[in-house]
Length: 409
Image (cartoon, rainbow, N blue to C red; front, side, top):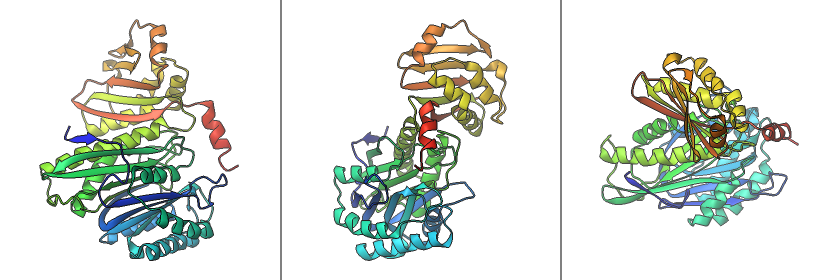
C-alpha cells in the first residue's frame, strides 16, 4: 500500500476550503447548502448519471467539466433535486454560479453546481441567494469545516461520509480527500449519489479523468441499494496542483500510485453509501472470484446485491442460497452453475453453502449466526479464470418502505 489513511475530508489536501450552512431549503432547519472552494484553479474531472432523465445541475456540470479549462468551486444544495425543471432549472444553475462567482471573485464558468432531493420542484432561489454569503463567510480549511460540508449535503442519509489519504509523489506529500452522500435511489451506474473528491496533486486533465473513470467502475458503479438509477448522480474530482509534485502527464509509477490511492478513497465512500442504505441493518458485500472476464465478475456481483429476494433473506438472517444462485443466473453473464462454490462470511465466521452447485451439509444455526452480523459477505467461486469483482448493497427492510412512502411529507 503506497498511501496512508488519515482522518479527513475534502479539506485534507492543501488549498481547499469548505463550509456548510442552513439556508432554509429544508423544512427541519438543518444544514442544506455546502460550498467547496480551491484557492487555485483546478483541473476537473467528472462522471455522471446514465439516466436519460438528467437533472439541470448534471447538464451544467457536464458542460463545464468537458469544455472549461478549470473549475474552482462547487455549490451543493440538498432538499430539492432541480430535476425535471426545464429552462427554469437551467437558469437556476446559472444564477447560482453567477452569484457564487461574484462572492468568490472567480468566473461563473468555474463554479460547478449540484443538487439532491425531491424531483420536480423548482430551486428556491431566494434561499440559495441567502445561503451563498453564509457559505463564503464560513469557508475554512479545518477538519470541522470539511465535516460541516459533508453534513450539509445529506438527505435521507443517517451519517456523513468522508475519507482521506496521504501519499508521496515525486518526493512530495500529496493528499486526496472526499465526501459523498447517498442512501436511497441507489443502483449501479451511479445513484442519488453526489461525491466530491479533492487532491493537491499536479496531474493533467486527461489523466485525472482517466483515473476517475477507472476507479468509478469498481466503486460507485458497484453499489446498489434499491435498483433505482437517479437523475442527479455526480462524481467530481478537483486537482489544484498545490502539492508541487512533478506533473503527472504519463501513466508512470506516480500515476499508478495516485490511482491506487484514489481507488481507496472512492471505494471507501461507495461502501459507506451501501452501509447507510435507507432502513438497512446490514451491509451486503458480494465477491465473485474465479471469473474468466472482469465484466462477467462485475455483472454477477451486482446482480446478487441488487436482488430484492436476496436482500430480504439477509434481513431475515436466512441462508437461502437459492436466491443468490438465481440472481446470478438471470444476470446475463455466462457461467456453469454446476461448478459454483458459494460461501457466506462475517465477523462470526465463514461457511460453505454450495460445492459444485450442490448444497453442503452446513449448519443452519451457524449460518444464521454468520448472517446476524452488521457486515455480510457472499463469495461465489465460478472456477473459470482469475478475474474478481466486488459489489456492495444492503438488506431490504420494512423501514425502507416507510422512508420512501413518506419522503415528500
